[in-house]
Image (cartoon, rainbow, N blue to C red; front, side, top):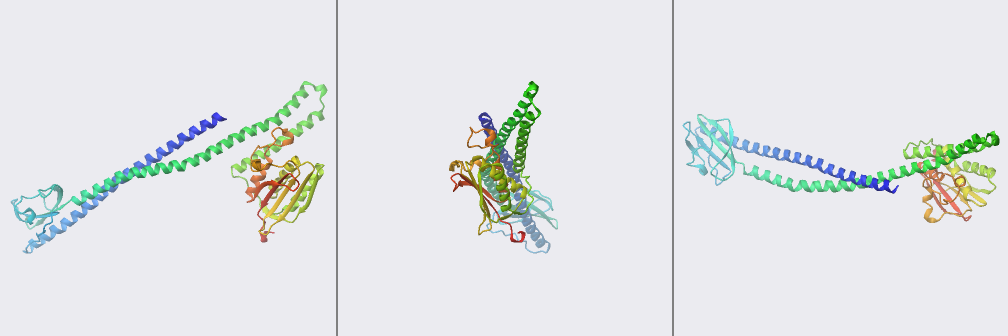
Length: 411
C-alpha cells in the first residue's frame, strides 16, 4: 500500500508538471499570435491614417493649382510633411521650403503611393501622388510615429508576455495541486474501500465454504439442519454486507435517491425499542421519546435507527435509552445512549468512517462490519442533518442525530 501511495504521488506530480507546462505553452502560443496580430493591425491602421492625411493635403494642393490659386505649400518648420509639384518633364516646379531645390522625392504615378526614404531624416515617408492638370503633386508624410508606436507595443509585449505566462504557470500549478490532491485522496479511499470490502466479504464466504466442505468430507456426521443453519446465517450476514456496500457506493456516486415524505421519528424510535426488548435481555428505556416529525425517506430513516440501536446494543452492558425531541428551531434530535465503555474524544469522528472498529481484537461476528455508523452518517447527511458522539448520562456513549424538522404545511 505504501509503494502504491508513493507511486500515486509521483504520478500526480508528473500530471501537475505536464498540466502546468501545457497551460504555459498554449497560453504563450496564443499570446504570441495575438501580439503579432495586434502589431500588424496597429501598424496598418496608423499607416492608413497617414495615407489619408497625405491624400487630403495633395487634393488641396491640386485643387488650388487647378483654380489658378497659390497652392498651400507652407509647412512651417515641420519635418513630418513634404510637398512637391513635379512638372511633366520631371523637374520640381514648386515645393515646400524643407525640400526646396531638391529633386523629386519619389517616382510615383498619380493615384499611387509608395514608401521612400528622404534626406530630411533617417525615417521613411509615405508619398502620395495626385494629378494636377498635367503636373503631379507629391505629398509625403513621415512614418516615424508608426514605427515608434510599433516598437513600443512590441517592447510591451516582449516584457508583458513572459510576466503573463509566469502568472498563468503559477496559477495553474496552485489550482491543479488541490484538485489532484483530492483525486489522490479519493483514489486512496476507493482502493482502501475495495480492500476492506474484499476482506469483509471473504469471511462469510470462507465460512460457507468451510461448512460445505465439512459436510462433503463427513456426510455421516452432518445433518441438513446442521449444515443449513450456519450457512443461512452466513448468507444473511453476506447479504447485509453487500446491501451496505451498495448503499455506500450509491452515496459515493451521488446516486442515493430519497423518497421524501413526512415521517414521525418518534414512531420509528418506539418500533426500535420494541424490537430491542424482544431480542436483547438489556433494559431499553423510551421515556424520553417525544413527538418529532421530519421530511425524509422512511425506509432510510428506519435503517439509520436500526444501525444506531444495533451499535448501542453491541456495546451496552445492561441499559440502552432512546430520546426524541423537537427544539425551538424546529430541528428534531434523536439520541441513543448506552452504558458501555464509551468512545474516547479522539475517536468520536473516526468511528463514522468505513470499516473502523475501535476494538480490533473483537470477533467480527460481535463487532459488526464497521459500516453501520458510516451508513448512519451518510444517510443523515443526505437528509441535511448531522450525526455525532458524546458522553452519555448512562456512562457510555451517546449517539446524537439532528434532522431538519418537517415544514408546517407538510406536517
